[in-house]
Image (cartoon, rainbow, N blue to C red; front, side, top):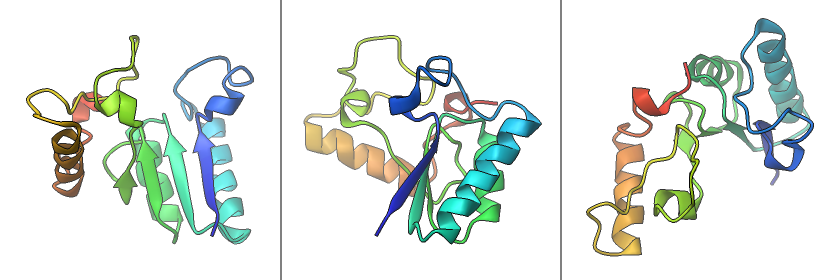
Length: 133
């Protein structure tokens, strides 16, 4: 199975003008929707959407029939993903808005990951403050 990846793609960060939120205007949103639908039509079984305003994540969730996994894409995606180093608080700043340190108060790496999973399942992550407007 294939997983597509759109929005801020780190391998293309220099072409995108740096680590910037994607999908900020109508043309960019239309392109993201077109790209997502093209990936779905080509046979992708799921899609990662990274660093976009929460309303863009919601719009793509409504447009797709495959699972949509958000990484800084708002709470309306089917699931969430964070880089382990980010969720453990060991990535040096500056950090993206959507990163939360789940190691605070956790007694182990496993406990931090469990806290993250629980927050996603209970839809407490990402919070409105961790989303791009």
